[in-house]
Image 1: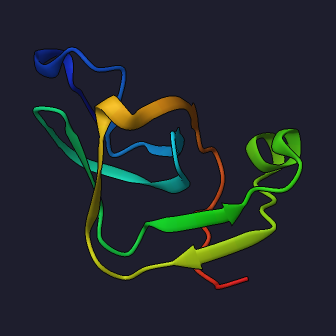
Image 2 (image 1 turned 180 degrees about the vertical axis):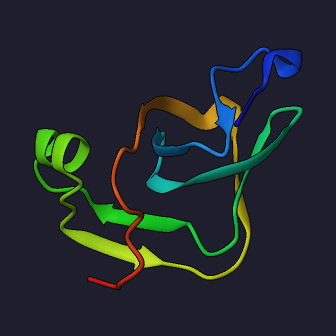
Length: 95
């Protein structure tokens, strides 16, 4: 895992995060960070339509509505309102 001190971000390549932005939530593993963009690793990304009870989501990895995708994707750092380390298996089943 490589800390991204060059871009002055708290994110670490190879770590998994739950991101909340101004419009949606995502979970995934950070592949690279370039400028203001975090690229998430292909096959690790899910859009979280409903996280359910937040403590259960973050502490136990329980999510109510999940839409996994297989392609690479990214997120603009400026759109992130908060984030949490994801210490669970990444969801890969639609629910």
